[in-house]
Amino acid sequence: MTLVLELKPETLRRIEKEAAQIGTTPEEMVVEMVESNFNGESKTDFRAAADYVLHKNAELLRRLA
Image 1 (spheres, rainbow, N blue to C red):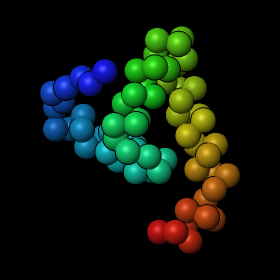
Image 2 (cartoon, helix red, strand yellow; image 1 turned 180 degrees about the horizontal axis):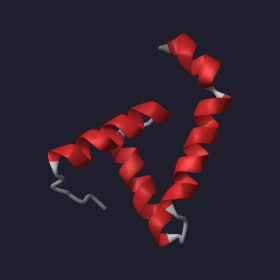
Image 3 (tube, rainbow, N blue to C red; image 1 turned 45 degrees about the vertical axis):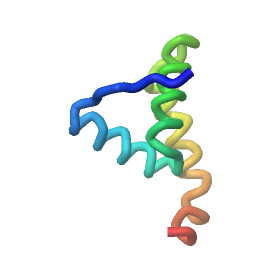
Image 4 (cartoon, one colour; image 1 turned 180 degrees about the vertical axis):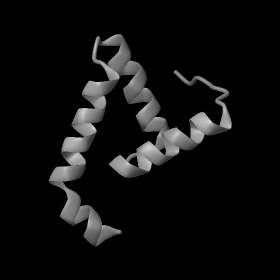
């Protein structure tokens, strides 16, 4: 299903920034956020998982940058 959202510019910037930090697209991040919300996972759970991946792959991400 395709869904079109109109976001405030500042919201879009935050999504783009967060997505770039975890190495995904803004679209994939929004899908994950929506699915996590409906599966009962909290935003902090998602952020904790993202932080874990960033920390775990920090050296690799640094080399790719």
